[in-house]
Length: 285
Image (cartoon, rainbow, N blue to C red; front, top):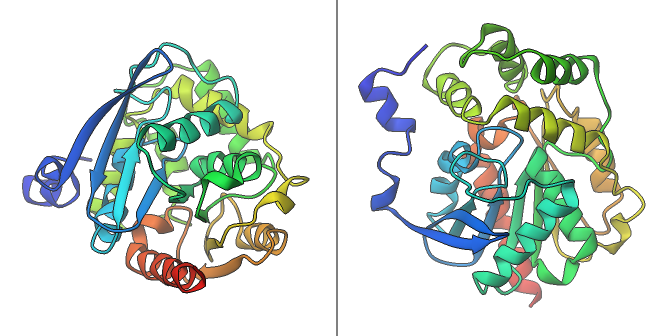
């Protein structure tokens, strides 16, 4: 399914250069793609398992109305010309810390979604002094393998699939918390998820299976916000609430009717909650 020209313009990245600043950052023997939007307190958005930074553009535009938003490419993303692949989530967290250092950001807000939430959590427990505030959506402290994730990982590992494969698209549809109505947002998600190589998706799923920060959450000492879609079937909301319960002083918010991609479908609400967190942080300074 492809977007009609007028609808594609609404969701595509094609008009982003007029509103944002593109940079190429040398890191790990290669080039990391960075896009900066807006002005104000900086927010670094950490991409999920598939789709890269472009999948976060609708949320970034909303947040950039009041903040500076930094998007960047993970190792293994298309266009991220980095020689070495990450071995684990610790490598991704190290990349994030290095990027913050290279951009000379002083304790920015770090906002990670799904796999990016795990990256943000890993950095928050290992280098809490580098983060001013933490926002997470669609993540837990220890990944639990489900039948769906096991099947997806096996298929991605063993069977080369054509782009826009109907079988894998069913897993992408689960990101919405059920079968979504066809439309530009669904097409946008599927299109950008397929920009991530299937071997990279499989490798990142393996990293999540080995991810566990449950015994290090006490180290997180910055203002924290956990956002959970009430229809998230990838990481159910009660498991995200458990994460919030174990992070000292964190705030938990339910996104009514949202699935795993609530950062897209409910981005206005998400931006509002993030704004409240940052205002409360400033009032404490």
